[in-house]
Image (tube, rainbow, N blue to C red; front, side, top):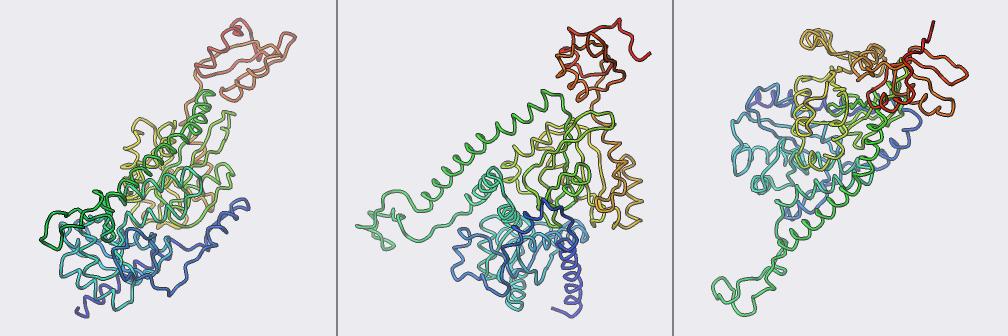
Length: 491
């Protein structure tokens, strides 16, 4: 390697590590008292630096928990170098979130991955030299590897190789808290593991009876099913059980959604890239006291909080799981029940990190995932968060490109008031005018009108409460027996 190439690689690594450190600096976290216990629990388990995880038998890779310590990153680029470096920076942040230390990184210009070693024979050998020189335990590839590519790369590098999908699954496994979240993550991990199984020796795998060639013959017949087939069958059985469990948990969330729909409560789903500040913004909008951590995938379980418009109409905010480039399809499928919170909403609040090097890439990645849960007919409001630390030139460019978007800071509360007004204006509003006389014994109807409609005038008389209001169609039908169009109220 020439000195020029080494200087270029070192400069790129500096940018990678600077981005990773910035993304994971927990000193800037803003938390409320109610969420400090969650943060303390998450920080209670720390990996010990300096302990090697290098495997003597690399065939054990698929059966061990992904424990990353000293890692080297590697990726390909076939579009622009800027996109490749943004992707490798994000991979560095993901690796540090999983609990590892990034030592070095390389990117290679290549149109298509090598079918044998992903990087190609020469680059794989160069990567092996880097791994040996820095004493790394693991190599993380910035893409999903085919089983044959990972085996080929491990044969050359002689340490564990983990791809981007396995890394993200490991982070989800660390952060899942609820019973449903843990089941969803386990299902995604098993779906990823199933095509990557390897045999573990000769146990129950002898099926060559009757042939002398190759050392087989009498006494070599097995029971007819290899060990790897037994493993696959057990995994499929476990996956079926997990799918049944997740399906059994779905009615609880469905019931809550149906209750909100039956009561005509509008819903705002907060979606966006991981670490864009969705939970921080939810706390500002509703005083939700959701755990906030400056880390990737800090929030996995959806959080629903109630709010009211200035006109007194009740609606809800739902904080969903964050997205990332190349989000594993196993996770999209496993978290489909969670993502349905977005598909059943009345408004998508799409949060984007304005300080990120590639906000357009964030927007594209989120919209690609949302296509899978059929949210195309739901209104979307783009919100660029972290405007207080974003470059002014970038903000100006985003203003010009997305004139309808809102720019806020969940930390300084800049633009939050304007955002609330915009959200309220985009919510479905009651549109049927009614004049009713509600008997005093039907105070529940008065409460419904205030919660779901817009009261224009109200008077109290001997016969009950006279009200003139705008209400949804379903509530108007419920009030049919009490309508009094002849009443004159407010004069």
